[in-house]
Amino acid sequence: MNVFIITILVLFLLGAFALFAQSNRPTELERVYGVPSKLVELVEKKTEPFILVDVRTPEEYRSGHIPGAINIPVDTIGSKPPTPQKDALIILYCRSGNRSGAAKKILEQLGYTRLVNFGAVSKWPKSLITGTNPE
Image (cartoon, rainbow, N blue to C red; front, side, top):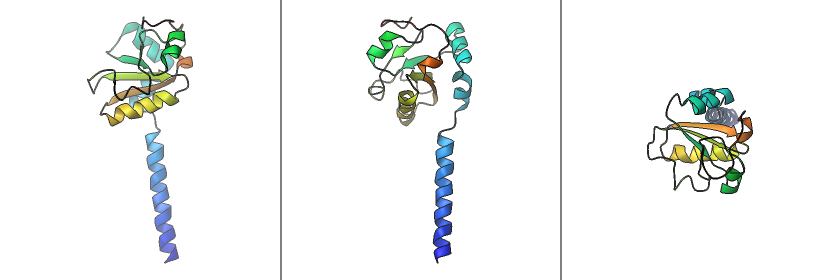
């Protein structure tokens, strides 16, 4: 009886670990647009439609953001998503990647399907824009 319970417990833990590992894997879109040079190319050449979202506070956004980014703080993104179009390419970033990861999960729960957690704004290799205007 103890062997059976231990076996079930081990299988459960292995399954939970597999699900956790899979949920933290980068998506195909993240393997492309999570690379700074690829995001630079997208922002500069606009090779496909996208929405770039800075999920930091308005103060952080004003202090320096990626050109073309709009500001939707993570604590409001669930009630004010960037677009009603659920299949739009939405690229999210913040200071460290934690808030953009949380924003990605919120948007996934709302049914958005083409999301990228770019991570930290410090990965952006070019100059940032200051002020409240995206450009």
